[in-house]
Image (tube, rainbow, N blue to C red):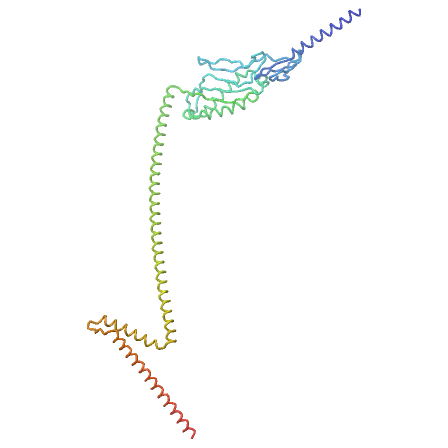
Length: 372
């Protein structure tokens, strides 16, 4: 009995160990990169398994598999086909990569009642797989209808003439509206591109002609603007040339006037210095002559003789019948004249002395008579 009981205990532990290992391996979930899985516990969402090794409780937790996530692509015939982005590579996997939804061409009406067929392509990605599965019944179909409705609203605000040039603006507005609507679905709209906008054949032809006319008109405007700029540039160049020439002439006149003024100033300064030196020389000569006469009174006779000779020489040069006398004789005459002038001065001096003596004697006699 002891041997049998011991063997039963061993068998129990062996079975328990095997069962535990099986539970552990069953609860291990390996999620590939770029995918997630949703886990439910007792039929309620429990958690999201991220890429890598994850653990669940076998028998309590289970991977949600009863859903489908897909998008739409345009096929070669102009229709659309469904493209799944879930349950790959394993059942229950949800791709978190960016997806494309390409609706088929549909007709809508512009603000001027023109029938328009826009070609739209939209890019989106899942940011919360839980919301994408639990908050919306059919994500792909819901996105498709939402895109068409939003495009119709935006196209209806524009005239057919403006649609061609407003494609980028329309795409931005559609993206903003879709982001608001798809936020509860755990989806983010990354881009909305309008590949093409088609009209009916008759309207398309009219639009092409109108566009050609606008391009021709724009070209004429550009050409006229260029011609205007050329004329303005030429006029500005001519004006600048005239201004520069006038400024050059003005500077030349100013330089010429300054040169004349400087020359006149230098000439006046030269004349002034010359006259000053001349007067200074004359003053020094007179001063020296005065000192010489003061020290040697007889020099006056010599000076008068020299002046007489100068006058005689001048009169001889001006007279036609002048008689030239040798210099010795002229000197003798000059000496005789000087002696004569000296004698007259002496006579005048003696006469003045006698008159003064007579006056004094008369005064003395009058005083004696007064006393008697």
